[in-house]
Image (cartoon, rainbow, N blue to C red):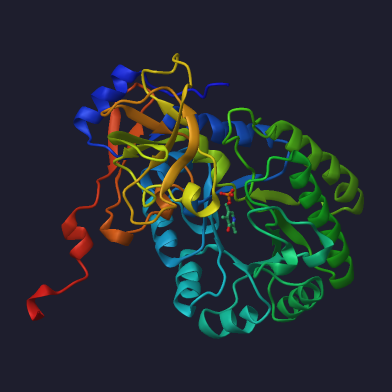
Length: 416
Ligand SMILES: *Cc1c(COP(=O)(O)O)cnc(C)c1O
């Protein structure tokens, strides 16, 4: 069994846990910065390349700020996400607003911020025009439907609620052109947590062909294609990370074949990766509270599904390291459980681990994206704190844990 590394020793983590009570999420700043740089470096060939970090994956302004410092923008889908991006200093066309079923107020705010607006449906053209006015630049989201196979998390494109059909796309751009929109983008997102690099090359190829076809038939000029997010991460120790350079080279070949010869160059390439940027570099740290031995062995920890719900809702694998016992044999099968009154509140099921004692610190890996972010308060569970492990080894608290007062903040007990 291959191990997965952690960016601290057992003693260092004990020290951190003495100052900041468990459970907490801790993010590795150095590794996040390196991943962001690696993506920008790999795509340096692409004119005007931009990565808009999907805020929903890790909506903490300190993380957004360090990504901004690396040159990333923000992909937002709601009003609070727009405000977070703004607070982190990400403004104007560095914000992509990719929403769906969008309230008028959110369009107004996105317009006010000068964000790039990415429309999910043809009926949103008149809706946007009526509520916020049409900007000079607009992007439309394509759903290829049966023309494209989906993948496990996002499902089949024809069953997905997102985007325009091909026919609607042509009609949409024509309407926009006739109403004076001058700058155009084309977006799609057809995969989530996908580890096959060809998938992203095929997506870019599909968008490049479409840009060529629509530019020619409508006489409009596209400024960018946005291939969305969805690059997966190796949650399991035996999986391989996606080779970003190979993805980039494949997209470059498609660009040279489909875009350059038609005089459509320069056409910018945009991405909205979330998971691959922060996912592997966030850890949920939790302490073992109880050991229970019934029909199975259970290790009950002080975190629960409210801190990380991917295992509970998707049956997703998250690797677990028992700190200080990395060299011991994995000789005991455990269900690692939280305290929700829901039997799917399990971080791992029948997982071989070294023999666990009460008080052991467990590190749950790959919790840096869609982890804290998906938290909830069911069963009166409070959201935990978020910490940043700085390149010099120091630790900064970037979000405090919720208290009971936070949980009660929306209630008025005085009228009871
Ligand atoms: C969720 C989402 C992303 C990010 O997906 P990852 O799997 O985190 O890369 C990007 N764009 C849109 C529109 C999304 O809904």
